Each structure stands twice: as C-alpha cells, then as structure tokens.
Image (cartoon, rainbow, N blue to C red; front, top):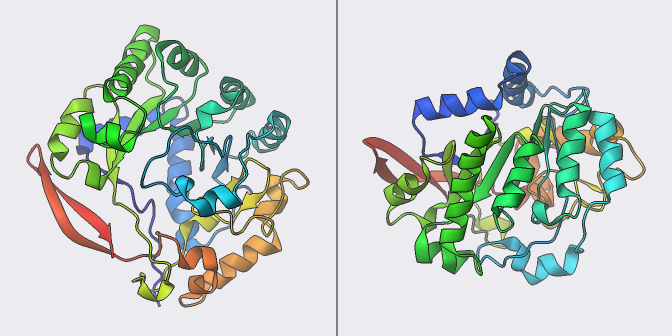
Amino acid sequence: MSKSVPINKGNYSMETENRERLFEKNRGEGWEEEYKQYRNNWIKYPQECIVSEYPLLVDLELSTICNLSCPMCYTITKKFRKNIKKSYMDFSLYKKIIDEIAGKVPALRLSLRGEATLHPNFIECIQYAKKKGIKEVSFLTNGSKLDYEFIEKIIRSEVDWITISIDGVGETYETIRKPMKFNNILNSVISLKSIKEKLGVKRPVVKIQTIWPAIKDDPEKYYNTFKQYVDLIAFNPLIEFSSKTSDIAYEDFFYCPQLYQRLVIGADGYALMCACDEYGKSRGHIGNANEETVYEIWHSSKLNYIRETHKKANGFKELEVCSQCFVPRKTEENESFVLDGRKIIVKNYK
C-alpha cells in the first residue's frame, strides 16, 4: 500500500520557473547548504516517517487576535470566538522557547490564527530569534500595520520571509478585507521593495497570496499588478467544509506530513496537533510549553500515538481534527487559466 503524503498542499504558485528559483535562492542566501538540507528533509522526513531530534519548523502563535473580519475566515465564527481566548504570547515564554531551539531548529514561523504584527513585542521577537541564530524567521500578515516606518523596522530586524494575504484587487479586495483600502496595501508592497533596495538587501523575500475566487475573473490583472514588487505570487482554493465527514471526499491512504515537519505552539503555550487545528481541538492533549520543552513535546507519547494512527490505512479518520482538515481532501482539476502563455491548473477541493 502506497501512502499519499501531500507536501505543501493548498498553496499554488502563479510564477515562472525562473522567478521561483530566484525566490528559493534568496531565501537560502548565506546558509545555502543548510537551507538545501532543510528543504530536502521537509520532503524526506514525512515520506520516510523520520522523527528528527527537533522539528524542522516551529510555529509560535504570537497573537490569536485579528483586527479584520474577512468573510471566508474561521476567526469570525461564533465557534472560534467562543473557544479561542484573545491573547498574545508572553514574551518570556517566547524567549524560553527560542533559547531551547536556537541552533537546533532551522525555521521559525511567527503566525497561526491571529495577526502577528499586533503583538506589542513583535519587532523584539524577530530580533531575539535572529540574534540567537534561527536561520529563517517568517510571518504571515494581513498587511494592516505595514506603513513605511514599520516596514523599515521589520526589514532592519533581519526577518527572512513575509507572506501577505491580498485577496483580489480594487473593490474586490476592499469588500473582503474590510476596512482596508487597496491603494494602501499596494503602497505597502511598493514600500517593501523600495526600502529593501535602499538598504541593499534581498531579504525579506516577499510573497503575496490570494484566495482563488477573488481573482478568477482576471488572474492576469492580479499577477501583473504585483509582480514587479514582490518575489512570489500564489493562490489558494477556497476551503469550504461540510459539518458531516460523510460528505467529504478523501485522498486514498492519506498520511499527514506535518507530523514530521513542524511543531505548533499556541499563544497560551499549549501545543497543537498541527497548523490546521484552527479551533484548538487538540489543545491540552499534546503538550504545554510553559511546563515542557519543545524536545519533550515533539517526542511525546501523545504525538507518537497520532503518528502511529496515521500509519494505519485511513487511520487519520479516527482523529477529529484530521477528519475535518482540508489536507486529506481530494481535489479536482476543474478550472484553469493562462498567464503569459503558461497554463495554470486550479485544484479545487471536492
């Protein structure tokens, strides 16, 4: 029986091969061999079920709070607001985790459910991680705080990678990303490039991403609006779930790669099963970074039980979080578009 282990599923590039290569080159500049090994292991470890000494990536949720109410986002639901407490990660806990993983974990992501830039110590968080030797520090943002002064602080902090969610252009963007204005976010993207050029740096690499329905009427306009200012442009198919797992079409023999790639720690210090546990259903069942080390959580009997469950044929269906997740869902290639003569397939969830 062959396992289905989808790597980086759900985010699809709109880019040329040359621009993708340059993006990867700039991501790994200054630690080329280590970066190559890190990216190879990102694929190898889940495919061969290798539990490394430490995860390749640690996700630290700096904030569960978001300042927008986008219509497709789970954070606006009553379920989320009832179950997830509004909070920022305590800075002392953050430093405790960084002190342990520095030199052992190559990559750090400062985002999960909320808007990371709202954290009162956001710049200090980046600086502390880089000072301790974390090779790649990244975060996802809605861009609401990216004015010129803050952008310059971010770049000078030596963050390595920024992903900005920009859903569509013009009125479409403003309808989805209320109360933000499209010209403001476009100016932020332009400022990122100009400040990088002023400082003579290639990082942070800047990626933007959109949900597919926001650009499907004119994907070329979206791409051409931003390509001269950013390093990579991508899109995500819209995730819509039935509450009944019986209605979901799953991949055959699915096996989740995240169990061998990354460890997620929420703003309250509790570890989660994975980056897709948006509602925190596994909170309290995996580990607590306030009391345990990252090493202990990563090698815990609880996470090992989940890994073993996934090894069984369709074992993921025994786990509530996994049975509702988008990653095991089948996709269908039922849409496509042409960009600069390149045909790009849209893989929508069934």
